[in-house]
Length: 481
Ligand code: ADP
Ligand code: GLC
Image (tube, rainbow, N blue to C red):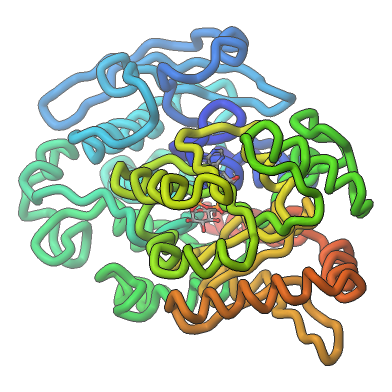
């Protein structure tokens, strides 16, 4: 089976968060189970040259966007054994960074349209397209519309994965209708209309053959008004076709034993982890004290991540004599927030703004605790990476965080993290204080690390489920033909 993964980012070519990790690692793990996998994504200007070099032009064609025709190049190449297609259009993607432009929705309407328009030029036809998040959510809609207009074309089943329900790709109805080349009246509540606007995400939710999201708890949460972003009813209407499967991480790429970013390779050896801690402390100008507890944060900076909870309790946290190292990129207000922590407590806090893969890995390795006070978290990969690097997660009980971190129980010695239920600064501080108290009891702390060491964070389980799902859909298609 040939599976095409349509996604707006994939490591190592382009990544801003977990979506880029998840798409690449799933494609790799499904391939290990025998599927043919190819990733298709935009050709961003910022893709490093070393990767761009691997690509060759397959075909130049035009993409019809309403009355406009946009040129598009289909490029093919392989990076680290993984086949990729890139769609190149200088107007939409010849810009710095991945996201954050005023015409964001239009750019990815173009991307989704271009994926469908590129199908005839692909060397091997995909048997199934697996789309991710709103940026590729119009593909199932476009394929179903096309199938209705041209019934002789072979149907291509689709799977749509929700990594974040609150990024939706909304546009005024007439604008979306114009881009899709349909009459505004065609965008009704039964199609892409949502509360008076057009919504790209709804295209995936309604038209894909199956839906998945990245944890069981998030699947429950998005069926409520609080987390559903006005689409909870749509998800409820497709409950029978939707699954909540927790992501894994690529355990080859995230392996503290083989991570070139680290000073001292390790797996469970405490003294080696301390060497990494001291190296980072020195590098960042913090007192290089191996015993001092170090709390790490590596995060996209958006309100989703709940970092505002830290403001009112930072003094108390620093009063516990802990160090805090934060790396993040995103919204300017949030960047200012983390910088203000460092100004308040320069001897205890270091905040680095920007996207830095190497520093991120050094923080996972150096930290004793990894803090994620997310308001909501569909899955969360950072807590998995943290556990893999034997940094103990302290997390809010939401979505995938709740599903992947077992709270430590001092009575039984079970569990590998600290979980707080109420989303308040006080509850978070209490969980951190609990973690710091256990940290000061080395025997108990060892137990937490040992519990993390027993866990399997790989993609194995989830990839098997996905491949099984692809098989089922391909079998159904065969029966239909
Ligand atoms: P989300 O996808 O919501 O950003 P996840 O926890 O699923 O959250 O994944 C985040 C991924 O992005 C992890 O691999 C994390 O290490 C990485 N990451 C986030 N911010 C940065 C940053 N500023 N620099 C480097 N890596 C980052
Ligand atoms: C999204 C979510 C995150 C999830 C990631 C990969 O970015 O915010 O929770 O881990 O996608 O699925």
